[in-house]
Length: 602
Ligand SMILES: [Zn+2]
Image (cartoon, rainbow, N blue to C red; front, side):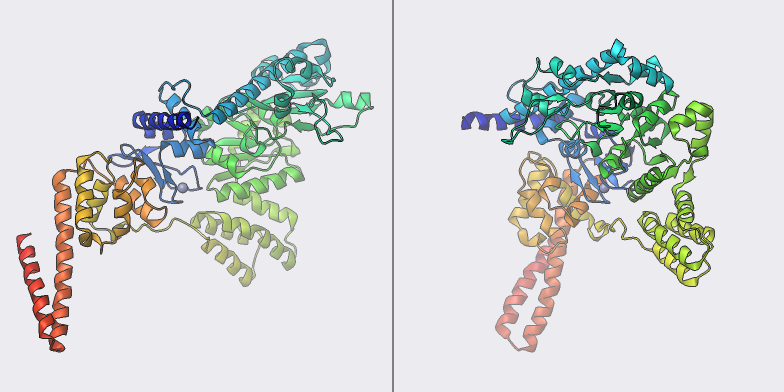
């Protein structure tokens, strides 16, 4: 057993290595981040792991790693996919292999546990697919008449129903169950989140029954368009008419399952992502119905949060496509509060946010139905900067009639001002606020100014300039693949004359690089300043390293070391002479003479 497991591990590592060698890291990362060529072998873009407006995220094409000079993340193509897709290492290998068209080895790839997990996912995806198809069929059945009527009443066309796979969950406790229980075990059905059950007295789960009943169903898809959950809207008329049932929530969502986590999905992202890239902004609305009606009216770059405040994870999802967002939430109190929360998160993550408030207190769905898509597109163009929206909101919440209200309004705005990453934008925001709220108090103005001036901020300055050209060359050589001659020469030099290098600023990087295993150089050095320095050096490489560069660099470092020793000896000799220690003077002078000889030879 243990030998087979070990063999698995070995062949898996071999496979990962070979995928890594064949994969083009720039192409793979380029699918997630817009990259621009920045040097001979490096590309830059906006970091998907922290909010920023100027690119500090770099990818090295030949050395096959990425590094962000803003937040310090580093790694190879697998760790990138792992972090962004939130998957395990083996899964990341699989994804990269598929992206690069490298066939997967059949059996030995997965451990038993991973295989079980992936079988489980496949089953759950399959159940969701079948559920979606079944709901779709129910909508077209006689029982779905009321639901069809409702949809028609809201202007949802047949094409839209097909495109979004809108369906109907009939008023039955075992409609869906009777279909799916033939396919999978009760345990798998329970994990799917499509069913409810009551806990028995002994703590075990009771029999399963359909979770969604008398509801219009909207599938929620992952980024690749597979159904992973549902949100379901109650049929207003029916619930009121039947009267014998407790009215449930207006919208009922799938619970958290192995496939679905609410804060990690954006409704419609699968259909919208291409348009978001092209139009360079995303339109964010609150609910599925808004999203669907905006999308079908012809605005394709729209996504919805599914009725929750925006999460960090969702921000990261979006950042891969754009850093500009237009928010159009409901104008009611809850909507305004949600907009405010989302603005806070998004500006902190470095997004440029604008806000649409529609005339007449309408939500996007009704606005489009009543006034048409042209009027809506016009409203989008007139979206206000988020700072204007917030100042307006401060004025509504605390009408600036007296000094106390003005203080309250300023206090409402201060955290929003502090949150913005950009100094100029903060200053502008603070000045606008002072003006529009009519702040004449010197103290309040000062407070605003201070909020604008400081933010915990920002990118730490680089230390690369502290490092000499010779040190750079040495580090570049030590970062080459282990079987390259230049690596071996550099490693040998460091190993045989450690004293030559001990005094260097980069001394602490030499041993980790020299003694590293097959993993890349960035993995070998500790995260932090050393890693940032190495990344900077490697990103700035122009062309391949030549043997004579390395020889010259080692010679220079040696000379520096000897000169340093020479200076030290001079003062030691002077010292010994003062103490009249003739023996010591002799020894030191002998050493100095041989040093002088060495330096003359160099
Ligand atoms: Zn970063």
